[in-house]
Length: 285
Image 1 (cartoon, helix red, strand yellow):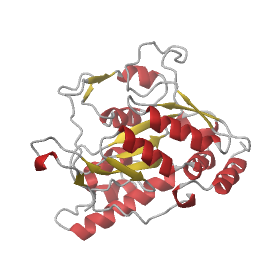
Image 2 (spheres, rainbow, N blue to C red; image 1 turned 90 degrees about the vertical axis):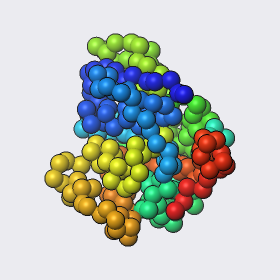
Image 3 (cartoon, helix red, strand yellow; image 1 turned 30 degrees about the vertical axis):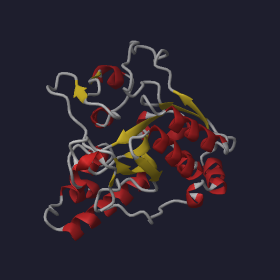
């Protein structure tokens, strides 16, 4: 059983991360049970719908530096070599991974492997589009992006670094031993670092279905009562076609914010030996 992680909410809140961001990321800590401090029993992430490896950015008005600009985040999206990232994720596991161009996991009804919202160079990165985005955000030579990386994702970090270096974006692991003024040391391993510009996370649903999957992502982006929030809360239970379209609309609305950048999607997973004979299971519906 994976070790329990306790998320020290005050550390991240004092560093300027909004509460909804901290809670959503804490709930999705990669590959381990998560316990929100003071909130009772650990939350067990489920893997029945698979996972999506993605970058998460804090609210732009909470951030400083280049990544507060949509075009700089677009440069990250378009420059990525998703093929390399999928190979790295497959090597580290669990299961097999493919390039991700949207936020839906492959086990969701909303999963659409052919959808493209931004240029991606057939998965290898569209470097000209990325350079144009860098010019648009006033960073033609690139910038430094500090990324909080969960345990067990060193190969993915290397693929992220090499892909973005092609357009001058330098990726550095966020340093937990160098917090901002007023923020104590000792942030636990796997907790989003207070100094990070972005968080690399294995996002996996807590419960089956489109609303449960997109809930934490929407809560961090959309105001209560907004169009996205109302779409999330629409009752599509028992209607497979409606739930599929609900998920696809939420996916595309979230992508338009550039707050989450998909990197790789889990295509198969090896369950516990007591389930399906322990054989690799294809997650696509």
